[in-house]
Length: 154
Image (cartoon, rainbow, N blue to C red; front, side):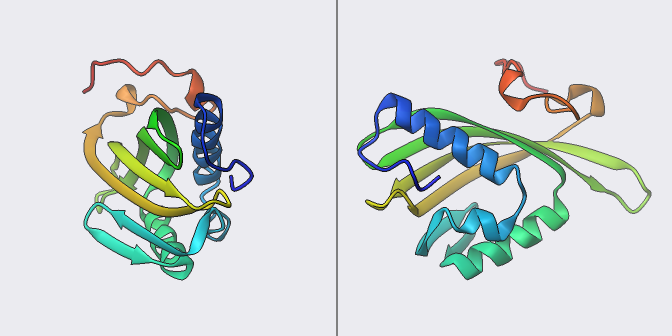
């Protein structure tokens, strides 16, 4: 992801967005953290992080909770060194009674990049919505980029 450097064009901003999507879908916190500056600053909902070590710890806990995680990011807007994306991801938690409850998380991210192409600031706002198995978009074997994202939501 760091190979694409600012200033961004429509093409490179889209490439950066999809590179981030693919990287996050690995669910490998140490690998994901390498796309950020060593002193990166994050706001993820109500959590504030600084540095790769905190990012790795945060993502490790996130993906331990969010089973079946599958993410899609879409380019929303960009400037010379900033990109905004909308995203959708689905995951489940197993409740004490053994029921698997699926969620879709909707949100927006605001990214600021250093000159070397690493992300130095990430701000995320998101909302989790319970969905049924039938309402899932990103079922096993589906390419997340081919799913039609409609304006109708559960």
